Length: 120
Image (tube, rainbow, N blue to C red):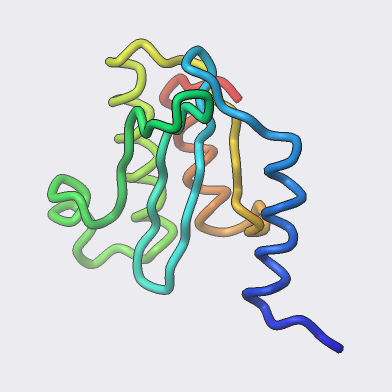
């Protein structure tokens, strides 16, 4: 029986999460991609807390992203998240692509975060 796209991504996500774990020093950078928006969080899995988050729905990004395509919006989210996390003293993260391919919006977000100084 063939899997749906959602089931396939969920299985891959579970396989990835077996190996990836975020700490307070090196949190997990989890990405969620919907049809319209992209969301990213820095998560400390030991305490179960979100340390920092950003998305295309935040006011700073929404104002700048009018007329841009979705991959350019993802770049803005990566840039702002990296700046915000470095202000909080977080320089290293573990990247969790949540079962999505490292391609398109997910890749643009990650590359822009690296450019701004996050290490992963």
